[in-house]
Image (cartoon, rainbow, N blue to C red; front, side):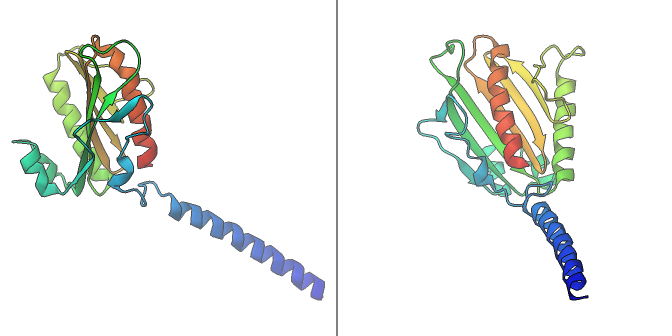
Amino acid sequence: MKGRFLDVSARILSRDAVVGMVLLIACAKGPTGPNVTLADFYLTTQISGWVADSGSHFVDYSPTDLFSQVDGAAQPFQDGGLVQWCTEKMNGGTGASPANGQYNFSGSVYDFGTVTKAKSFYESKIAVDMVQTSDTFSDTVPLGQYTVDEAEASRFQGGITVDANFEKYYIKFSLSGFADPLTAAPEALKFLDKYKAIAQ
């Protein structure tokens, strides 16, 4: 009888241990990356071939700072529920020789607090971009495995601009200095992959 009691107790403890481990994993890494902060998006040294821009650095802002940094375009962010945001500039890249001596990266990460708010803001920005491009969307640039549900890129002379949405973050960055804008896409994928990994 004593042995049977110990056997049943061991099974219960084993079951509870498994449940506890599952709960611990779920809490440690939820769908919105609860332990992620904007500081985690500081990409210097994390992207192969890219370094911090000289004289520039990673800056963390509050929503009100946006009005002094983005002239005439801040209100939609505030209306959309922006909580916090940051910017970063880098130089480098790999591949063909840059048109002006170096490639340039300039990006911002916007924390909207919830997945729903970030997705809504991203979709509104993509809708505007589609109206501004031609009916055939000839200015869009393919981004590998990423569909428009997660990221969209458009070209300009010398580079591309990318809009993306991962979890509660809306991300926008540009890559410039490329003789052919399409050659910027592989570099953009490096940044998108890293952003996605951090957000999740």
